[in-house]
Length: 245
Image (cartoon, rainbow, N blue to C red; front, side, top):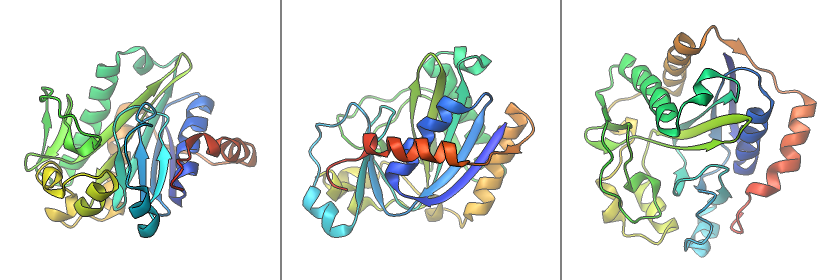
């Protein structure tokens, strides 16, 4: 399994890099990353939602369109992951649900190794008509104290499957709600950050994730970005930019 860690890249670079890597690798790859600035990402089918653009510009919150589906996520204090496999891999032949279950179980195992009292919801809860990812729950959702902790989205083509998502450290409820013109009260009881329960260093969280994914997908081999890949990333960044940026 390949491993790549990148910290503090711009949102458009993060999204382009996930796709270019997925198109390029010939074995499973786990990427762990963070964001240069607070960034709202919206699902690729979510372009028409009403955003508080004036507030986002004032607050310095960027906006990107993910290559995956799902609802809006505010990336701020979190560890973001992307896991991808080529279309020839056994996991790529599984259904969307089974692929997601495999990834969720692996992340769940990593969090449990850190003595976090996380649970995994096996049943999908009633759909909430909200533009916010962390106000809705899906199958195999990882929760902490009954609140959503991890949000994810998936993209699949004949050549690869990509799933990426956020493990929250802090929630930033007020800012998240204002970006989407929502009442903060409607979000406050829906999701949680790790730091509200336990002081977990990003390095410890990263190490546990790498260990769990490595146990399932084989020995870890560090992946190196080269000039050719980065050129392809920079050429694709424009696909993922929102008008707010």
